[in-house]
Length: 124
Image (cartoon, rainbow, N blue to C red; front, side, top):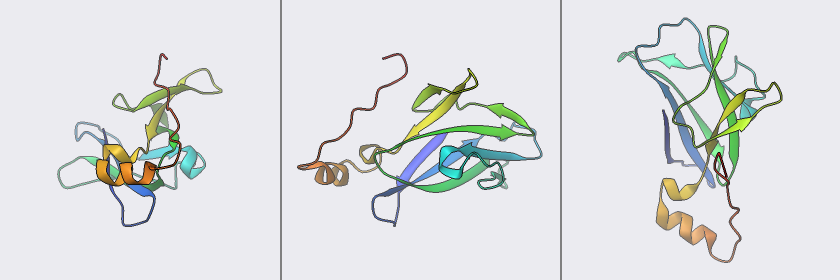
């Protein structure tokens, strides 16, 4: 699951990646283009409730490809904003940092006079 929240950093969103407590694993990480596909940079921590979480600050109006690294195996996010074919012939999950999803009034004021790119969805 992906949760998007306002950030204290200008032009950023806080994106929280979450995997269920039912996941039995030793090492879980978010591996993405925003962390140079390095499984050591964004580890997920298991909370007291058993849920695995990692949070990152990402620039708005961008698309980021990611996958989960679970004990050395790749996994995608079924609730991702989109999917993208990767160079290995499989799919990466995509998170889109659209500020409208978090705070519509701020996003609309940021859009005035500026072009906003269309983000195609999987299958378009």
